[in-house]
Image (cartoon, rainbow, N blue to C red; front, side, top):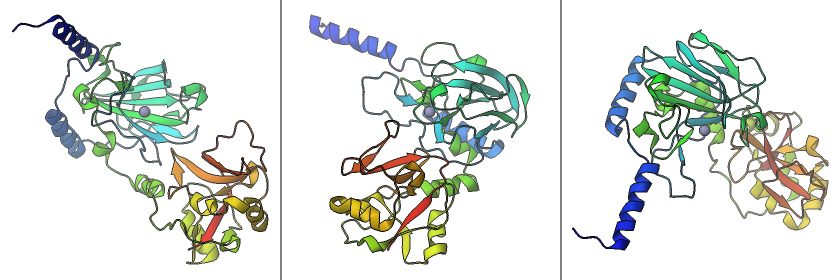
Length: 341
Ligand SMILES: [Zn+2]
């Protein structure tokens, strides 16, 4: 085969890509699937959080090529407030507990009986955490950290489960033991989908229901200001807001959605006044946004700022130059906005 200069350069580039791309893979898809099945039957791991459901999965197909080299997520992310307790998923030995780049605090537990290790990232650097020794399943090992101390936008746990023990992997490169992202499909490097092995707990199922999109929102219908009601009690994102609305107003009301409020965009001040929506974040009302109640673990809510949105308030959307804004946060106790079905 004779190659011209251009083809040679092309081949060299492909070779380089392979080197910096996926490189050598340790496992194949079938071996991983079989081992995952076996672990599902023989292990008795628990989820590291008492509540909350993984909202961002392990990458299982090649995402579209981007500028970023490492764009395959090796773990499952669950969004939970800072201070949420984190537990050992099974019996094992802590093989790492310390700060790690991009993670805040990171803990690795080797589970020799199952020949896997579990990885818990974005833990609090400042609160108590277990630093070494043996752990039993369910032992408290750390707390979820604040977003700022953990190099993340929103507080969450990055929870990985991988074939082998920490010592089986190098400190650097695509196969490194603490990799949160890699160049190629994580299964080829031994990373499992943890929730497929652990299964779903009742609280995970409940949480999943909360973040699922509701289907009964009709956009474009004509609403009057009088179709909205504010609950007399305050609630938070962990409660079943539909049930709370039903308790207060009966079957004919549901949680209001940002789309419902958008229909008042021309006379939003009148709407807010007639509703009795007060100014400031403390008067915010819980709602959904385009059918979703939860965004990355945070409950959506509407706030009235009379055109003066605080600088630190991150608005997903706003009406009439920040007269009202759509925000989201965790752990808020607020009144809930309901609307006639
Ligand atoms: Zn993650």
